[in-house]
Amino acid sequence: MAPTLIIDGYNLIRNSPVLAAIDRRDIEEGREALLSRLAEYKRIRHLSIVVVFDGTGSIHLSNTRENRMGIQILFSRQGQTADDLIVSLARQKGRETVVITSDRGIHDRLKSMDCVCITSETFDAKIDNALYEFFKGESLEGEEVSASPPKANKKGTPRKLPKKARRQQAILRRL
Image (cartoon, rainbow, N blue to C red; front, side):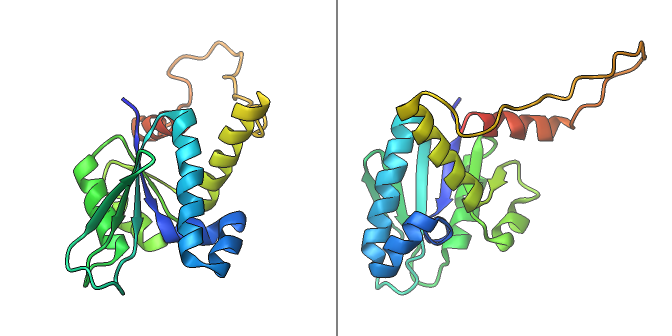
């Protein structure tokens, strides 16, 4: 099953050098640039994507939902922050959820839950790599060098990450 990405929209925009420059000119253009970039990424990786924007200053009394280019877009309602909505969505979606934000508060709130959190900068680099790979046929990321276990004839299990960390790494490899 493909993971669901829950993205803190404004956080990703402001932590991406390209999107931040567009956002400084016009906030609506920044959102549109993010959505078109995510649509390309979705077309390549075939993931379910939910983008959450902070709608605190808006007049909407309830969450506004929109679906464009196969991406679900949510604005938080009045009196609710995007952070609260992201945590609520992550709780609903469960295990196969990846939350993208650089907000330490959200990371801390999601630690006890069984979802993966990555920073906006890391995800922005993953998008760049996926797009480069798709158009050029080669990866921007360096070849991963796997640490091979020592050749000595030792008993016992080799060093490996805990099960939760291995599961999280497997999810991140699919991004």
